[in-house]
Length: 400
Picture 1 (cartoon, rainbow, N blue to C red):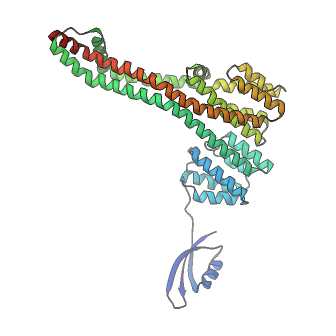
Picture 2 (cartoon, helix red, strand yellow):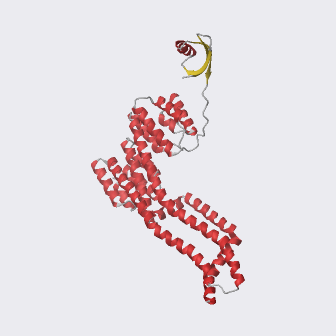
Picture 3 (cartoon, rainbow, N blue to C red):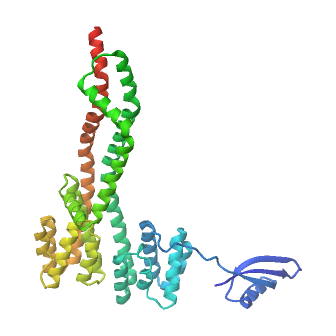
Protein backbone atom coordinates (compact mmCIF):
# COMPACT_ATOMS: atom_id res chain seq x y z
CA UNK A 1 0.00 0.00 0.00
CA UNK A 2 1.47 3.43 -0.97
CA UNK A 3 2.53 5.86 1.71
CA UNK A 4 1.60 9.55 1.42
CA UNK A 5 2.96 12.70 3.00
CA UNK A 6 -0.06 14.93 3.46
CA UNK A 7 -0.98 18.46 4.51
CA UNK A 8 -4.45 19.65 5.55
CA UNK A 9 -6.49 22.05 7.66
CA UNK A 10 -8.68 21.39 10.69
CA UNK A 11 -12.15 22.93 11.20
CA UNK A 12 -10.51 25.73 13.19
CA UNK A 13 -8.20 26.56 10.24
CA UNK A 14 -4.99 25.16 11.80
CA UNK A 15 -2.53 23.48 9.40
CA UNK A 16 -1.56 19.88 10.08
CA UNK A 17 1.00 17.59 8.40
CA UNK A 18 1.72 13.88 8.56
CA UNK A 19 2.28 10.60 6.75
CA UNK A 20 -0.21 7.77 6.24
CA UNK A 21 -0.74 4.66 4.13
CA UNK A 22 -3.74 4.48 1.78
CA UNK A 23 -4.75 2.72 -1.42
CA UNK A 24 -5.29 6.08 -3.15
CA UNK A 25 -5.45 9.84 -2.53
CA UNK A 26 -9.26 9.66 -2.41
CA UNK A 27 -9.14 6.99 0.32
CA UNK A 28 -6.64 9.14 2.26
CA UNK A 29 -8.97 12.18 1.85
CA UNK A 30 -11.88 10.15 3.26
CA UNK A 31 -9.86 8.86 6.20
CA UNK A 32 -8.68 12.38 7.12
CA UNK A 33 -12.20 13.78 6.75
CA UNK A 34 -13.34 11.37 9.48
CA UNK A 35 -10.70 12.95 11.75
CA UNK A 36 -12.00 16.44 10.92
CA UNK A 37 -9.14 17.34 8.55
CA UNK A 38 -9.60 18.66 5.01
CA UNK A 39 -6.83 17.42 2.75
CA UNK A 40 -5.08 20.17 0.79
CA UNK A 41 -1.98 18.36 -0.57
CA UNK A 42 -0.69 14.77 -0.75
CA UNK A 43 2.58 13.45 -2.13
CA UNK A 44 3.36 9.75 -2.50
CA UNK A 45 6.55 8.75 -0.67
CA UNK A 46 8.33 6.05 -2.66
CA UNK A 47 10.04 3.36 -0.63
CA UNK A 48 13.81 3.40 -1.00
CA UNK A 49 15.09 0.51 -3.07
CA UNK A 50 17.21 -1.86 -1.02
CA UNK A 51 20.58 -2.38 -2.66
CA UNK A 52 22.07 -5.83 -2.18
CA UNK A 53 24.79 -8.10 -3.48
CA UNK A 54 23.11 -11.21 -4.97
CA UNK A 55 26.36 -13.21 -4.75
CA UNK A 56 27.02 -12.53 -1.06
CA UNK A 57 26.56 -15.53 1.24
CA UNK A 58 24.05 -15.23 4.09
CA UNK A 59 24.69 -16.73 7.53
CA UNK A 60 22.97 -20.07 8.21
CA UNK A 61 21.38 -18.54 11.32
CA UNK A 62 19.55 -16.04 9.08
CA UNK A 63 18.41 -18.83 6.73
CA UNK A 64 17.18 -20.86 9.73
CA UNK A 65 15.19 -17.93 11.14
CA UNK A 66 13.72 -17.12 7.71
CA UNK A 67 12.69 -20.76 7.12
CA UNK A 68 11.10 -21.16 10.55
CA UNK A 69 9.17 -17.87 10.36
CA UNK A 70 7.99 -18.55 6.80
CA UNK A 71 6.76 -22.00 7.85
CA UNK A 72 4.83 -20.51 10.79
CA UNK A 73 3.18 -17.84 8.61
CA UNK A 74 2.11 -20.32 5.91
CA UNK A 75 0.77 -22.70 8.59
CA UNK A 76 -1.26 -19.76 9.98
CA UNK A 77 -2.97 -19.35 6.59
CA UNK A 78 -1.04 -16.39 5.15
CA UNK A 79 -0.34 -16.54 1.39
CA UNK A 80 3.30 -17.08 0.37
CA UNK A 81 3.69 -13.63 -1.24
CA UNK A 82 2.29 -11.83 1.81
CA UNK A 83 4.51 -13.89 4.13
CA UNK A 84 7.59 -12.94 2.08
CA UNK A 85 6.49 -9.28 2.10
CA UNK A 86 6.31 -9.29 5.92
CA UNK A 87 9.65 -11.10 6.28
CA UNK A 88 11.29 -8.80 3.73
CA UNK A 89 10.38 -5.79 5.87
CA UNK A 90 11.63 -7.18 9.19
CA UNK A 91 14.89 -8.96 8.26
CA UNK A 92 17.81 -7.04 9.80
CA UNK A 93 20.45 -8.14 7.27
CA UNK A 94 19.96 -5.58 4.45
CA UNK A 95 21.56 -7.91 1.88
CA UNK A 96 19.26 -10.81 2.75
CA UNK A 97 16.28 -8.43 2.92
CA UNK A 98 16.96 -7.42 -0.69
CA UNK A 99 17.12 -11.08 -1.74
CA UNK A 100 13.80 -11.93 -0.06
CA UNK A 101 12.09 -8.93 -1.71
CA UNK A 102 13.50 -9.97 -5.09
CA UNK A 103 12.22 -13.55 -4.54
CA UNK A 104 8.75 -12.12 -3.71
CA UNK A 105 8.76 -10.02 -6.89
CA UNK A 106 9.76 -13.03 -9.00
CA UNK A 107 6.85 -15.05 -7.56
CA UNK A 108 4.47 -12.15 -8.30
CA UNK A 109 5.85 -12.22 -11.86
CA UNK A 110 4.80 -15.87 -12.25
CA UNK A 111 7.85 -17.84 -11.06
CA UNK A 112 7.59 -20.79 -8.70
CA UNK A 113 9.05 -20.36 -5.21
CA UNK A 114 11.75 -23.00 -5.90
CA UNK A 115 12.74 -21.32 -9.20
CA UNK A 116 13.06 -17.94 -7.44
CA UNK A 117 15.29 -19.55 -4.76
CA UNK A 118 17.55 -21.03 -7.48
CA UNK A 119 18.71 -17.48 -8.29
CA UNK A 120 20.61 -17.50 -4.95
CA UNK A 121 22.58 -20.81 -4.83
CA UNK A 122 25.03 -19.35 -2.30
CA UNK A 123 22.15 -19.13 0.22
CA UNK A 124 19.77 -21.93 -0.78
CA UNK A 125 21.52 -25.20 -1.69
CA UNK A 126 20.17 -28.12 -3.72
CA UNK A 127 18.77 -29.78 -0.60
CA UNK A 128 16.71 -26.68 0.26
CA UNK A 129 15.44 -26.21 -3.31
CA UNK A 130 14.56 -29.89 -3.87
CA UNK A 131 12.60 -29.99 -0.63
CA UNK A 132 10.73 -26.81 -1.60
CA UNK A 133 9.91 -28.40 -5.00
CA UNK A 134 8.54 -31.48 -3.20
CA UNK A 135 6.56 -29.25 -0.82
CA UNK A 136 5.04 -27.16 -3.63
CA UNK A 137 4.10 -30.22 -5.70
CA UNK A 138 2.61 -32.05 -2.71
CA UNK A 139 0.87 -28.99 -1.21
CA UNK A 140 2.86 -29.42 2.01
CA UNK A 141 5.16 -26.42 1.82
CA UNK A 142 4.63 -25.47 5.49
CA UNK A 143 5.56 -28.99 6.70
CA UNK A 144 8.58 -29.15 4.42
CA UNK A 145 9.83 -25.75 5.61
CA UNK A 146 9.40 -26.89 9.22
CA UNK A 147 11.50 -30.00 8.50
CA UNK A 148 14.10 -27.83 6.78
CA UNK A 149 14.30 -25.53 9.82
CA UNK A 150 14.82 -28.53 12.14
CA UNK A 151 17.43 -29.95 9.75
CA UNK A 152 19.39 -26.66 9.52
CA UNK A 153 19.28 -26.27 13.31
CA UNK A 154 20.61 -29.78 13.94
CA UNK A 155 23.27 -29.39 11.22
CA UNK A 156 24.52 -26.16 12.79
CA UNK A 157 24.73 -27.82 16.23
CA UNK A 158 26.74 -30.70 14.74
CA UNK A 159 29.15 -28.29 12.99
CA UNK A 160 29.72 -26.40 16.24
CA UNK A 161 30.48 -29.64 18.10
CA UNK A 162 33.07 -30.71 15.51
CA UNK A 163 34.61 -27.21 15.41
CA UNK A 164 34.89 -27.09 19.20
CA UNK A 165 36.88 -30.35 19.10
CA UNK A 166 39.30 -28.86 16.54
CA UNK A 167 39.69 -25.35 17.96
CA UNK A 168 41.19 -26.31 21.35
CA UNK A 169 44.29 -28.25 20.17
CA UNK A 170 44.89 -25.90 17.22
CA UNK A 171 44.74 -22.84 19.50
CA UNK A 172 47.18 -24.38 21.99
CA UNK A 173 49.65 -25.36 19.25
CA UNK A 174 49.47 -21.88 17.66
CA UNK A 175 50.11 -20.20 21.03
CA UNK A 176 53.03 -22.58 21.70
CA UNK A 177 54.57 -21.77 18.29
CA UNK A 178 54.22 -18.03 18.91
CA UNK A 179 55.94 -18.41 22.30
CA UNK A 180 58.77 -20.47 20.74
CA UNK A 181 59.28 -17.84 18.00
CA UNK A 182 59.39 -15.03 20.59
CA UNK A 183 61.92 -16.98 22.66
CA UNK A 184 64.13 -17.74 19.65
CA UNK A 185 64.04 -14.19 18.27
CA UNK A 186 64.18 -12.03 21.40
CA UNK A 187 65.01 -13.98 24.57
CA UNK A 188 67.71 -16.45 23.50
CA UNK A 189 69.90 -13.78 21.81
CA UNK A 190 70.19 -12.09 25.25
CA UNK A 191 71.42 -15.37 26.79
CA UNK A 192 73.77 -15.92 23.82
CA UNK A 193 75.42 -12.56 24.41
CA UNK A 194 75.79 -13.32 28.13
CA UNK A 195 77.34 -16.76 27.42
CA UNK A 196 79.87 -15.22 25.01
CA UNK A 197 81.01 -12.80 27.70
CA UNK A 198 81.44 -15.74 30.12
CA UNK A 199 83.63 -17.57 27.57
CA UNK A 200 82.71 -20.97 29.02
CA UNK A 201 82.13 -24.11 26.92
CA UNK A 202 78.42 -24.56 26.30
CA UNK A 203 76.50 -27.85 26.67
CA UNK A 204 75.18 -29.57 23.51
CA UNK A 205 71.47 -28.69 24.00
CA UNK A 206 72.34 -25.00 24.52
CA UNK A 207 74.45 -24.94 21.34
CA UNK A 208 71.55 -26.48 19.35
CA UNK A 209 69.06 -23.89 20.65
CA UNK A 210 71.46 -21.00 19.94
CA UNK A 211 72.02 -22.30 16.38
CA UNK A 212 68.24 -22.46 15.92
CA UNK A 213 67.92 -18.87 17.16
CA UNK A 214 70.68 -17.67 14.80
CA UNK A 215 69.09 -19.46 11.86
CA UNK A 216 65.68 -17.91 12.59
CA UNK A 217 67.17 -14.42 12.93
CA UNK A 218 69.06 -14.76 9.64
CA UNK A 219 66.45 -16.59 7.52
CA UNK A 220 63.09 -15.71 9.06
CA UNK A 221 61.74 -14.56 5.68
CA UNK A 222 62.66 -17.95 4.11
CA UNK A 223 60.88 -19.77 6.97
CA UNK A 224 57.72 -17.66 6.54
CA UNK A 225 57.88 -18.10 2.76
CA UNK A 226 58.29 -21.87 3.21
CA UNK A 227 55.27 -22.09 5.54
CA UNK A 228 53.11 -20.02 3.15
CA UNK A 229 54.36 -22.11 0.20
CA UNK A 230 53.52 -25.39 1.98
CA UNK A 231 50.06 -24.08 2.85
CA UNK A 232 49.35 -23.02 -0.76
CA UNK A 233 50.74 -26.31 -2.11
CA UNK A 234 48.50 -28.25 0.29
CA UNK A 235 45.49 -26.13 -0.73
CA UNK A 236 46.21 -26.71 -4.44
CA UNK A 237 46.75 -30.46 -3.93
CA UNK A 238 43.48 -30.73 -1.98
CA UNK A 239 41.61 -29.17 -4.90
CA UNK A 240 42.76 -31.95 -7.24
CA UNK A 241 40.71 -35.15 -7.46
CA UNK A 242 43.59 -37.36 -6.28
CA UNK A 243 44.62 -35.00 -3.49
CA UNK A 244 41.07 -34.61 -2.19
CA UNK A 245 40.63 -38.37 -2.03
CA UNK A 246 44.05 -39.02 -0.44
CA UNK A 247 43.71 -36.37 2.28
CA UNK A 248 40.12 -37.38 3.10
CA UNK A 249 41.21 -41.02 3.39
CA UNK A 250 44.02 -40.01 5.75
CA UNK A 251 41.52 -37.98 7.80
CA UNK A 252 39.41 -41.11 8.32
CA UNK A 253 42.49 -43.06 9.47
CA UNK A 254 43.83 -40.30 11.75
CA UNK A 255 43.97 -41.26 15.45
CA UNK A 256 41.12 -39.78 17.53
CA UNK A 257 39.94 -37.38 14.81
CA UNK A 258 39.25 -40.17 12.28
CA UNK A 259 36.49 -41.60 14.49
CA UNK A 260 35.04 -38.12 15.00
CA UNK A 261 35.07 -37.46 11.23
CA UNK A 262 33.22 -40.65 10.28
CA UNK A 263 30.63 -40.29 13.06
CA UNK A 264 29.94 -36.65 12.19
CA UNK A 265 29.66 -37.61 8.52
CA UNK A 266 27.23 -40.47 9.30
CA UNK A 267 25.08 -38.13 11.40
CA UNK A 268 25.00 -35.51 8.62
CA UNK A 269 24.28 -38.03 5.83
CA UNK A 270 21.51 -39.92 7.64
CA UNK A 271 19.79 -36.72 8.83
CA UNK A 272 19.85 -35.25 5.30
CA UNK A 273 18.59 -38.45 3.66
CA UNK A 274 15.81 -38.85 6.24
CA UNK A 275 14.65 -35.24 5.69
CA UNK A 276 14.58 -35.71 1.90
CA UNK A 277 12.72 -39.04 2.00
CA UNK A 278 10.15 -37.79 4.53
CA UNK A 279 9.45 -34.80 2.25
CA UNK A 280 8.75 -37.03 -0.75
CA UNK A 281 11.96 -36.60 -2.76
CA UNK A 282 12.81 -39.71 -4.84
CA UNK A 283 15.56 -41.87 -3.34
CA UNK A 284 17.92 -41.63 -6.36
CA UNK A 285 17.68 -37.82 -6.34
CA UNK A 286 18.07 -37.87 -2.54
CA UNK A 287 21.25 -39.97 -2.71
CA UNK A 288 22.76 -37.54 -5.22
CA UNK A 289 22.12 -34.58 -2.89
CA UNK A 290 23.27 -36.49 0.21
CA UNK A 291 26.59 -37.44 -1.42
CA UNK A 292 27.36 -33.73 -1.92
CA UNK A 293 26.85 -32.87 1.75
CA UNK A 294 28.83 -35.87 3.08
CA UNK A 295 31.88 -33.67 3.79
CA UNK A 296 34.35 -36.43 2.89
CA UNK A 297 35.32 -37.71 -0.58
CA UNK A 298 35.53 -41.37 0.52
CA UNK A 299 32.05 -41.25 2.10
CA UNK A 300 30.74 -39.43 -0.99
CA UNK A 301 32.07 -42.14 -3.32
CA UNK A 302 30.57 -44.90 -1.13
CA UNK A 303 27.17 -43.18 -1.32
CA UNK A 304 27.40 -42.83 -5.10
CA UNK A 305 28.16 -46.56 -5.37
CA UNK A 306 25.11 -47.24 -3.16
CA UNK A 307 23.00 -45.02 -5.46
CA UNK A 308 24.17 -46.99 -8.52
CA UNK A 309 23.23 -50.28 -6.78
CA UNK A 310 19.79 -48.93 -5.86
CA UNK A 311 19.18 -47.92 -9.51
CA UNK A 312 19.92 -51.57 -10.40
CA UNK A 313 17.22 -52.73 -7.98
CA UNK A 314 19.53 -53.77 -5.13
CA UNK A 315 19.55 -52.66 -1.49
CA UNK A 316 21.46 -49.76 0.01
CA UNK A 317 22.88 -51.68 2.97
CA UNK A 318 25.07 -54.03 0.88
CA UNK A 319 27.32 -51.38 -0.80
CA UNK A 320 27.54 -49.44 2.49
CA UNK A 321 28.91 -52.57 4.16
CA UNK A 322 31.33 -53.21 1.28
CA UNK A 323 32.73 -49.66 1.57
CA UNK A 324 34.26 -50.68 4.93
CA UNK A 325 34.00 -47.21 6.49
CA UNK A 326 30.50 -47.22 7.96
CA UNK A 327 29.99 -48.65 11.47
CA UNK A 328 28.22 -52.07 11.51
CA UNK A 329 25.29 -50.61 13.46
CA UNK A 330 24.55 -48.16 10.62
CA UNK A 331 24.52 -50.95 8.02
CA UNK A 332 22.26 -53.15 10.16
CA UNK A 333 19.78 -50.36 10.92
CA UNK A 334 19.61 -49.36 7.23
CA UNK A 335 18.98 -53.01 6.37
CA UNK A 336 16.14 -53.19 8.92
CA UNK A 337 14.69 -49.89 7.64
CA UNK A 338 14.69 -51.16 4.05
CA UNK A 339 13.07 -54.49 4.95
CA UNK A 340 10.33 -52.88 7.07
CA UNK A 341 9.65 -49.95 4.70
CA UNK A 342 10.50 -47.40 7.41
CA UNK A 343 13.90 -46.25 6.13
CA UNK A 344 13.28 -42.55 6.80
CA UNK A 345 12.39 -43.10 10.46
CA UNK A 346 15.33 -45.50 10.94
CA UNK A 347 17.71 -42.95 9.41
CA UNK A 348 16.44 -40.31 11.84
CA UNK A 349 17.17 -42.67 14.74
CA UNK A 350 20.71 -43.26 13.43
CA UNK A 351 21.22 -39.49 13.12
CA UNK A 352 19.96 -38.88 16.70
CA UNK A 353 22.28 -41.59 18.05
CA UNK A 354 25.39 -40.36 16.23
CA UNK A 355 24.74 -36.68 17.02
CA UNK A 356 24.69 -37.59 20.72
CA UNK A 357 27.74 -39.82 20.17
CA UNK A 358 29.65 -36.93 18.53
CA UNK A 359 28.74 -34.72 21.50
CA UNK A 360 30.14 -37.30 23.96
CA UNK A 361 33.19 -37.93 21.77
CA UNK A 362 34.05 -34.22 21.65
CA UNK A 363 33.99 -34.10 25.47
CA UNK A 364 36.14 -37.24 25.71
CA UNK A 365 38.61 -35.98 23.09
CA UNK A 366 39.10 -32.72 24.98
CA UNK A 367 39.77 -34.66 28.19
CA UNK A 368 42.18 -37.04 26.41
CA UNK A 369 44.06 -34.27 24.61
CA UNK A 370 44.71 -32.16 27.71
CA UNK A 371 47.55 -34.37 29.08
CA UNK A 372 48.99 -34.81 25.56
CA UNK A 373 49.04 -31.04 25.05
CA UNK A 374 50.64 -30.54 28.46
CA UNK A 375 53.39 -33.03 27.54
CA UNK A 376 53.89 -31.24 24.20
CA UNK A 377 54.20 -27.85 25.89
CA UNK A 378 56.48 -29.29 28.57
CA UNK A 379 58.83 -30.87 26.02
CA UNK A 380 58.97 -27.88 23.64
CA UNK A 381 58.95 -24.91 26.00
CA UNK A 382 60.57 -26.72 28.91
CA UNK A 383 63.32 -28.02 26.62
CA UNK A 384 64.17 -24.48 25.42
CA UNK A 385 64.25 -23.06 28.94
CA UNK A 386 66.37 -25.91 30.35
CA UNK A 387 68.81 -25.63 27.42
CA UNK A 388 69.31 -21.94 28.24
CA UNK A 389 69.78 -22.45 31.96
CA UNK A 390 72.17 -25.46 31.73
CA UNK A 391 75.31 -23.26 31.41
CA UNK A 392 74.17 -21.19 34.40
CA UNK A 393 73.70 -24.36 36.48
CA UNK A 394 77.16 -25.60 35.44
CA UNK A 395 78.70 -22.25 36.32
CA UNK A 396 77.01 -22.38 39.73
CA UNK A 397 78.40 -25.88 40.31
CA UNK A 398 81.90 -24.73 39.26
CA UNK A 399 81.75 -21.73 41.62
CA UNK A 400 80.53 -24.04 44.40
